[in-house]
Length: 64
Image (cartoon, helix red, strand yellow):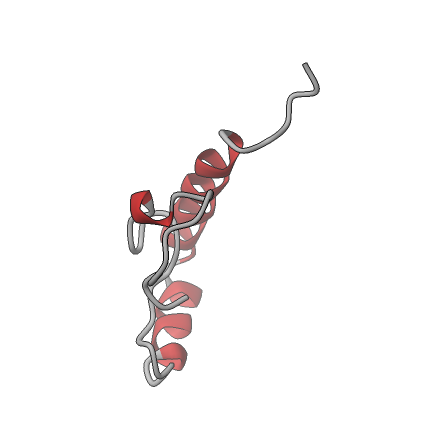
């Protein structure tokens, strides 16, 4: 996704590019290049997914 421009309850300002999400240009002009990089480097893609899932955990309703 492009770098977040707004801060909401999801605290986008704490998200780190290429750590919690794969950053692309606002005009999507580098989307194919970024996709190909992570297709070829699946270990890095899996790390981004793991980091993103860990970040989201703080927002889950535990039902307590």
